[in-house]
Length: 302
Image 1: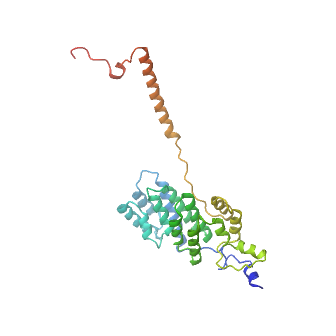
Image 2: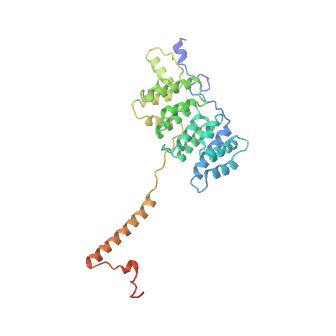
Image 3: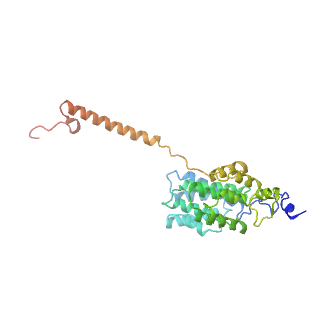
């Protein structure tokens, strides 16, 4: 068997060399389940009249005491009292929260940014849900990168935070830094395609040398989808990957329902217009009766 044939043989999914192997997570499954519950519950209850500190204290009692999440909430509540934000607490708990999670919350807490905190919490909730199941490195990265694209979180700082995630090995970190340098210059679909199994199989099929110079990070399906979406909107690539590979979808902000606010304003303006029209009609007929507004004038000697 030649070297090319050896490389292009089918690789079992559980083989360490397979790009489709499951991710090795730094935390226990219970931790991600509790993280997902925390992010979801906090986002839902923020619509109530309770303060964030009260919400943290309430949610803390609902979490499993056998996990580290209650201790993390205690520290977050303390930072919230002293600094007014809790992303700083997440940054100091780097062994529990990833740099990506911290970055998303820090952007949401920045008044100059447009990311709503409720959307940021839902982003992290879906990521934690995905990690609590059977995540892949490909799925984790593509979800994280899509959140940067759709919410305009900034590629430079965002990809630096993604690269700091302990879930990725050195091969992945090197490639993420390559994406960080070349995003906007090289088509993102091409960056995936040339590091996929499908790319090297195509080269071997054409009789070309098919020995990868760098580690293959994506499987055959990702390569096919990337090839089909070259020179297209990257959002189409993400949608196709979600449909075919089951990656989590990105939460989108819901359009604000303004009907209830607009109708009272319109009615108030109509009432003012009616009043002005009546005043103009009275003035045209001979004058405005001021007694309607100030009452009858006092008699002499009063």
